[in-house]
Length: 84
Image (cartoon, rainbow, N blue to C red; front, side, top):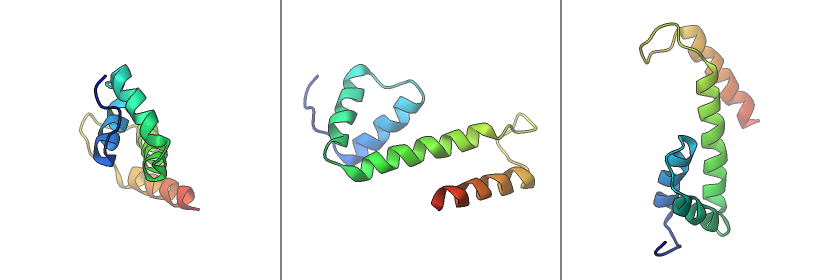
């Protein structure tokens, strides 16, 4: 498993990989060890998961990657609610 201590940059990469089911077991263990001493990365991971969930809840009307104005407004409102 190599060195178990990782940087915050590595932690954010593993966080993203974990959300998409691409992280290995070793990476997940390293990430959880990192969380034990890094509050910032714990908060980042929580916020990143919430933002991903918000984006996934908005179903685009077309196959492209653009959002309608109504979808953008809805996402902005969700982000404001999250901030409070």
